[in-house]
Image (cartoon, rainbow, N blue to C red; front, side, top):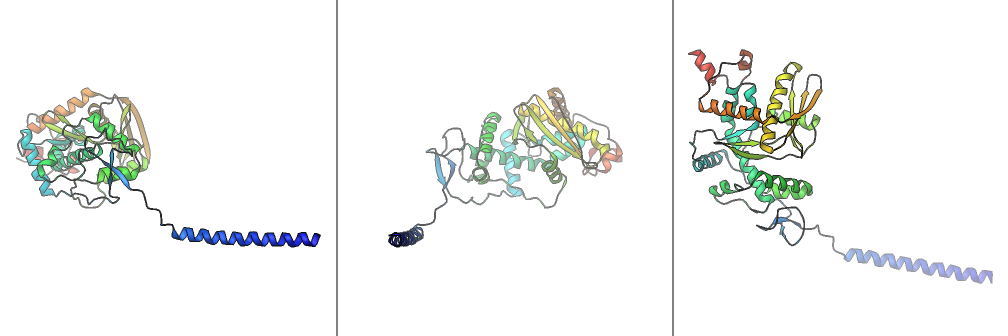
Length: 342
């Protein structure tokens, strides 16, 4: 009986093994017939007028291609024509300075004349950033889903948007996944070609990435008298604006710190924050100084007033220290030097 039970056991095991082989073969055939899973559609382009632009899936979103459309590149000549059209609608002369940057205004502490000359030289770039910022906001909230067809339409995009609306939309987009944010904000771009290489601006951004703090960022432009001020703090929290500055040597730390404070005051005034946090990094010894203090709006107003008066020719200043002139990119065209040479 032991031998019989053993034989029965062997037959049972053999049957189970055969059944297992048949099942595996069936599974392989099923897998072979099953088509590969398709990647999900990217559904992130909003219907115009639907909601607040918060990133979410659902009936309010329309299907969009998984690949980004080619960026719209506006040439320098096209930008200059758009800038002339924009100034005309504002009632300003073509040669008048309208678009300025916060960083340049803060340079009034270093040399007010340089701040104005640099702003005039950079106006087209600030205008480009103004356009790009408005277009990105319009994409975020579903105002547009494709590039404008006429030059006039570029100037109308996002003109009614407020800073509060833009901040809410930008923070909502930050909470979205990276590919959603890229698809919405990079599908239309205003771009000015610039030569390669790491200049002072690029180096400052690299040092900020390596040594600065990580905070939410956003760029916006604010009307002030006849100007449009374009600015992007290095960080923006619910309580303070964050400004990162770097300098090559410790002996320049005091002047860089004061410029950083002035720039943070301007950001605090424009972006409506009561506190500023300034971070100074010294490359010579890899040292950092970080401090917080209340935003001084009165000081920010004084800087803007000084800039405006000098731009209008209503303010005449003495020439700064000679060593500042020697390292200035605008020494040859500086009116202070021309006046002295005469």
